[in-house]
Length: 148
Image (cartoon, rainbow, N blue to C red; front, side, top):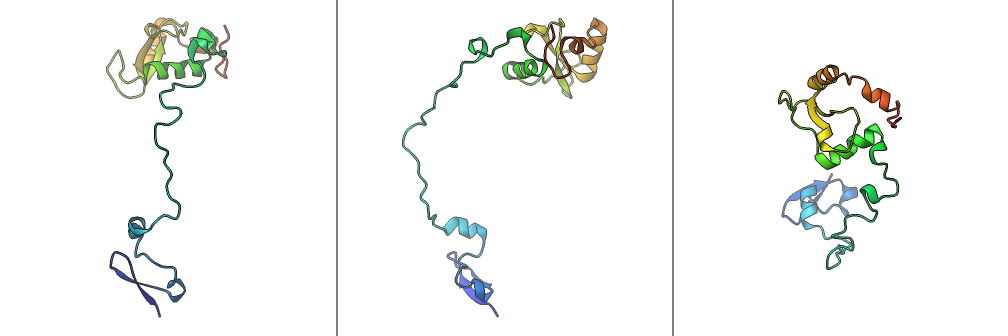
């Protein structure tokens, strides 16, 4: 025992009797195509109130919490990513797999010339060759806060 309903698309479909008064569409696709929304969509004319703004708070050295070169390890790497993008190609071997930012001087400065993009094996070799292996552990605490 079932009730037969005709969808606005013309397809006839059957439903159980308890749904006969509520069923109107043969599928979700037809529902999206034919259903009239009860709530009209409201769209204000003109640009958004904040279009063209770069942010409400100052950034960089103008911000009250700016730490300069005394920033922590993860914050410094986030700064690198924001300003120079993701490290994509190893500067030594040309690999594109597991490439990361490597520090040249051991000072961890906010200067692009102080950084290399190296794949993980080349980064390890570079740190061993230059004697920088473990430098980050001596400059930063286990939570990433700069010590010196």
